Image 1: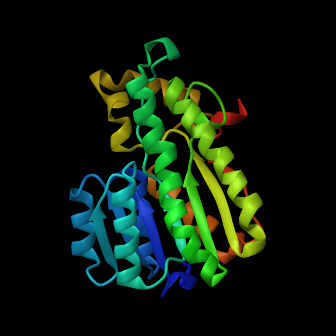
Image 2: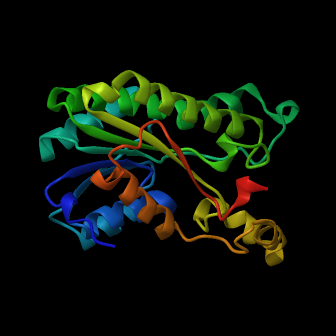
Length: 251
């Protein structure tokens, strides 16, 4: 897969230290883009910096902290002048807790990271995109944003919120040069899903059997879809939600 158009462009990615976010960052870097990444965990970010010292910069940031987000965006613009593509991937799970098992603290934690984090980052980057009258936003939702069962009450509600937010972004800013879409990953083999493979991996086996494609996907498959969705090849796609779920949501 070759997207030479990314050479010379800057991508801002959240949650890039592991899993899908790491794969997305690496995919854009391989295409020649510069990437500024944020995450609470520094380990994966350091690996990318070592591999791509001239293309990659990062800051350890909690997307739920508005001051940290503001500083991160400021640093990215100091480093690269402009941000062409925003990929909002940072997110956390809620251990499949029902609403009666969900404390107010857990609810707030999930929404502050999964929803408010996207709101913060987008609102600090979008004005700069509007100045250039051009920009692409790819938000990471989930199959839990389309159907029940992909998470608990808080997680599912948060991912539905991301999809609604993405559609409203497209509605409000498409004519101003901004293209916003969402991806909805299903069973992706990432550190976030490590518990599914524990204790003999019974949960992982069940998910595999229930997925029409009959397997889990690798983060790189989500990253490749992100490359397409952020590219000019997808220029007429606005406000869409693209499932990457091996057919889970067709059942």
